[in-house]
Image 1 (spheres, rainbow, N blue to C red):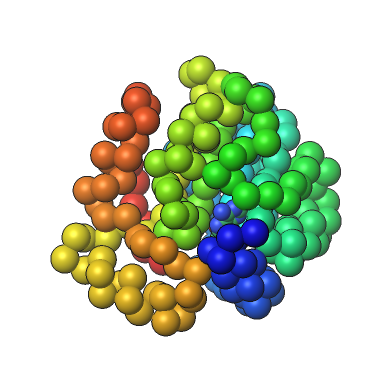
Image 2: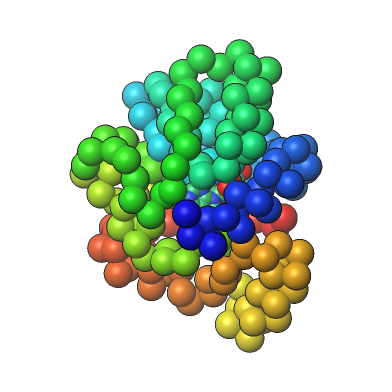
Length: 195
Ligand SMILES: C[S@@+](CC[C@H](N)C(=O)[O-])C[C@H]1O[C@@H](n2cnc3c(N)ncnc32)[C@H](O)[C@@H]1O
């Protein structure tokens, strides 16, 4: 295991319960916006990349045919299982692992999403290309994360690393569109909400 993977697991084992209960992470309005952006329906099979405690996975499972969540931190996945049980959702499965190499064949899912995790990745472009690989042609990719003005990002990263050393780097408002363009994604939509 790499030092970065160890740091992620250490941090999110500590944060698993408080993270899952924070209103900023669970409020319905932002979850509905994500569902709307992805145009999720009962025909969709969804992959939630770095699913954590399953908040977004469960919101999508209320609509989709099936949702798979993958995350490296067992304590977060334990919270995800509890949340799915509390919501009486049975159309989810959970997998532990690193997301730089997704353990799924090409074109497995119709929606591949990731919320609040890109700022933890060492190679966001590699993760996005894996997300694209496992998404069916004509499917949808959804990324939700902090996106900062370039003149604020260094200060933000410095403060975040004090709070959570597994933070790598927030992408800027200019870098996200470039990341998506470099991955050759089409029909790109953008929306903002405050956390
Ligand atoms: C801030 S939490 C977000 C959880 C969830 N996506 C949400 O929005 O509620 C970040 C999650 O990313 C996971 N993570 C970070 N890097 C990862 C990696 N390389 N492989 C798998 N999971 C990773 C952590 O374990 C953690 O659960």
